[in-house]
Image (tube, rainbow, N blue to C red; front, side):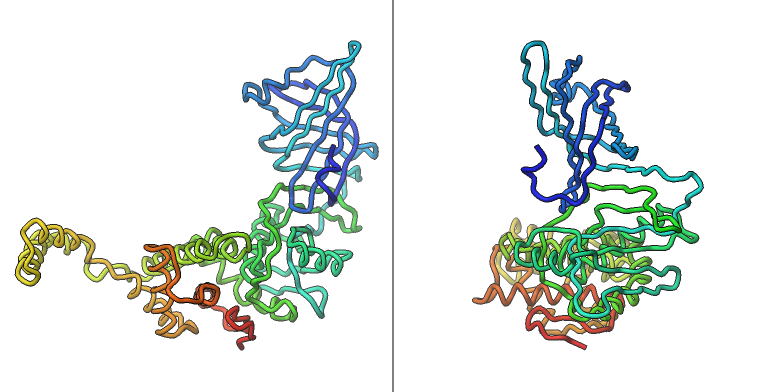
Length: 434
């Protein structure tokens, strides 16, 4: 059954149990695989007659608690999280029942038979879609509080060639972190942040889909598979993949700043939105709107953090708002020769006039951060944003070029927020900017 899903990264086989409603209910043989895109599939099958009612699982009346498996080499498997049964086939012939069940698993813990005194030394995260060519083939990242390595997996060149041509997702690299003074949960948080920064740098979603706990003797003690949200490969990169030292410099100069910024800004969602907008497969108008909305969010948080949201304190403004509206209504009637009703409608727009405009906040943010963005580029970005938001189209007669200008603008804005001053690629020309 699992062959129809194509190649897999890892496969387990053995005897399994299904637990639902707190009890063991279904004994079976199983095959379990993780696919290159992160999905974890469990195929349970048997020809033994058992009491079961899987229709209740499909209808939601019965909750599957977990799946457990024992492989032939005594490796044990336990699922975690809410299971989804996506296929259920049964046939009854001569008092025997052939049963096939296919589950999608959120997380799978795999424990290997090792001596109890073996303690994990390192943790290896297997990550998707990272492409860095040339030398060195392994990057040693040196941060104030942590050091880790990023290196290529076996058959790296073949896998990269495949995902570049097919645009599909696959594991390409490993992040390895020493567990000295760190818990596994600590390293998971670190790996998540590294993957976010790598995604922004590479212009494609980079995720870890499983990790291994490694002993001092280089034995695998445990492996955890995660059904991560992955996407197909994309190449609208920001940091040059042909020079691995650029990637090393980017991580080392932004990681610490990222830790403080993520407490203030929704950086995870912002980076995901930016990378999603760079992926092929959707209208560039929609992708540009995503970039415009993300910029709104970032600028809004910057203005709040720097007390630059308002021209006038809201409480003081509201005290004089009634008289202010009366004055605007009167002026509108006199200047534009409109009736009182129209004058009142014009005056109603005054309620938000204590706030600074988006342009005002964006210009101040760019000036404060000393971002590599000109006044003209600010005006062009705002004009594109407004035209796309209100009319659903670009300003110019060259939509692709306008889209790349928007991408470049947002890239440079976030680079400046992260405090990065190293080389990057400008997608408008694909030239390296020092």
